Image (tube, rainbow, N blue to C red; front, side, top):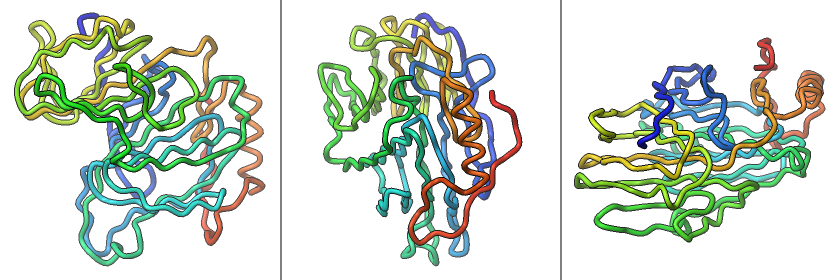
Length: 293
């Protein structure tokens, strides 16, 4: 990462009944390529009476990507999807013109001790697709491209890079890559990347020049082709990025759009509860008050 332009520290954020480490957006950097929101969940030790319960809430104008390291989440949405996500698999939900979903601890885990640890990511849709019909895709862990090179393990969780393509159906040029190494190694992969790029350190550390960066930091570069760094032993990092959009995207709560009018309409629709319903769910998260960012 020889052209690091910004270093972002993970910040605590409360999402209702769960505390997460917020990585994006940041006041000095609202997006990295099409990535507009990243939360690091956990690692959380939940006792036999503690569970993840995020009631139905809406989205527009984006795709959500859920990737777990530990634990399990039951996903239900207004398309009628009911599916458990487990570590290494990908839940990819595209909201388009509007979708509602809930995220809860599965019933069989609700009365036992458990762990929850993972990433939740929002990817903005291109302007011309913001009003597309919503859809949902689940990709099993074994279907994610994975390979080893010079003792370093790679996974292409979403997008295209290294001449490979993830089965996750993305809507703009992007990549989301896991890099793991048990030994200290030099990584020089800039020629496989494009656009803007961010690197999140989950565990271990990386060295760039004379600087060492530790967990819970994101390093952001404006030219992905210069992505070169030293990864320490027993380290895991995530690279994400791609081509930025030509127009600005606005965020209010769970709504993302290049058109503020669409966000205002979504606010009214959610207040009036005219969004589609999640079958079997009666609760909902009320609309908050903050302004569009």
